[in-house]
Length: 118
Ligand SMILES: [Zn+2]
Ligand SMILES: [Zn+2]
Image (cartoon, rainbow, N blue to C red; front, side, top):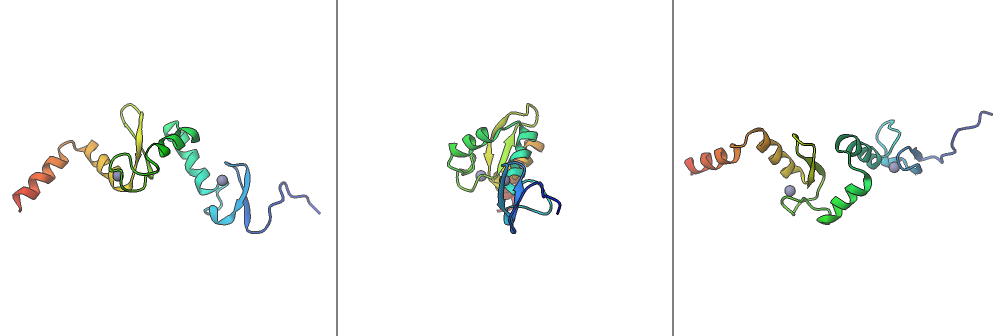
């Protein structure tokens, strides 16, 4: 009988990131790492952030957005010109900052538009 490389019980898989056996619900599709592991790989590759740096950033505002300090922090925000990581943002602030960077006058225009149509 061929010997398996790793004995993993039913309902579990081997996570390449954590080097541990984890419940199958933590994985998507046929990925070799769990969701969290995949995300941590991603921020390392994209922002040069190690897990510790990320956890520090996360802990700074106890897991809430560094901008509105209200909603859950889910996105790493970085300056597109310098690549410097600025902080963690919620979904809404992340979109708002993305729009603002592409159009510095956006919010003035929005205020102006609202004022004109009050
Ligand atoms: Zn994992
Ligand atoms: Zn926010």
